[in-house]
Image 1 (cartoon, rainbow, N blue to C red):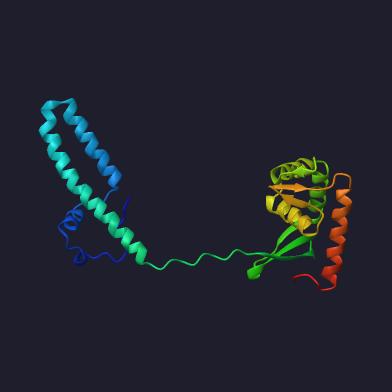
Image 2: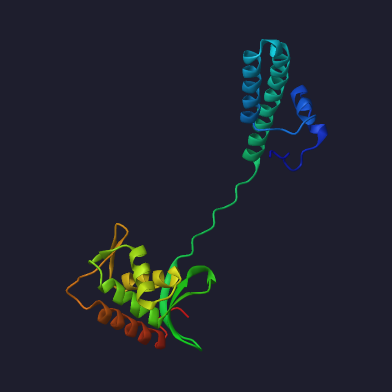
Length: 210
């Protein structure tokens, strides 16, 4: 439905076509045009109803003028309203190894003070194992499905994304054309664990985001 904009008051409506609009709820011009076509078809199919159809078309034509004016009024109103500033994307600022109360996890820290995304150590290891079993260039969806197959459970995709982004950040994986790439001659799980231990040391030394 087409609602009247906030701030609309009757005193603002002075044009006769706006007066017409006030007597009925505005419609989309496309809807009114469709009603005109229906009345034309009615008159053509039954000549005895042609006069009534023409009167209806004349009335709908006036309505169409009002509907178009109303759309123009809304567009002008929107153009005067200040535009909201786009929200700034939260960028990744670093990684750390988080020793929580119940598990150890890779934490991905973002700007703006947002809580970090966490990938449990077990899931991280399976991500590396899944990618190692691939062709050397795999898409994210394939990795996610393979991780769930190996773990026999549904795994939130953000956990897998944290692991893959970290492995790219650490230089273990490459990323190009929506595919994660790696050297199949190397032991990927071993390289992934080396990166984990390296960031664990950095975390203990206070060299990573808190």
